[in-house]
Every structure is written in structure tokens, then in C-alpha cells.
Picture 1: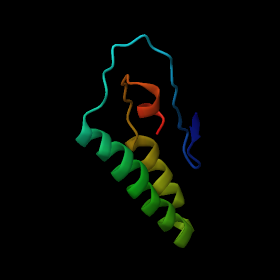
Picture 2: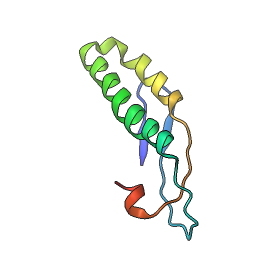
Picture 3: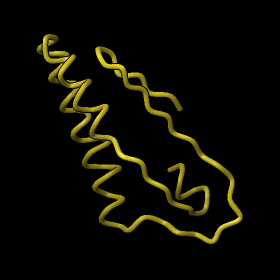
Length: 82
């Protein structure tokens, strides 16, 4: 996956690779924070703010492009993709 952040010089990529294991899943709390709170909740608020106040889009894009961090984990496919 490729993520471009308008008004910045930044792009992020996400890749998924097959692995022979062993499984090294993320912790339940850190997974919830990354996947639900930040990637869904905060992102939705940021998108809503940008839609309501378009002048904030460049600042939101700059902040978002710097806030995303690398993470690596291994697990069985249905847990990774759902």
C-alpha cells in the first residue's frame, strides 16, 4: 500500500510479506491503540476536521505523515488482515 500526504514531501508504504513464522503478534493493548484508537478514531476526527475547515488540511497532512511509525509483527493471516 502507498500513502501520499498532500502538502508534504512525505510518502509511506505498507507491505505484507509471507513468513514461515514463528508468530510474534502485537500485544492486545498496543494493537488496539494502533488499529482502533489512532488508525480509525483519530484519523476519522482529522478527516472530519479537514472537511469542515479545509485550511487545516496542510497541517493535518504534515502531522499525520510524521505521526505514523514503523511496526513489524508476524501472525496467522486471518488475524493480520481482519
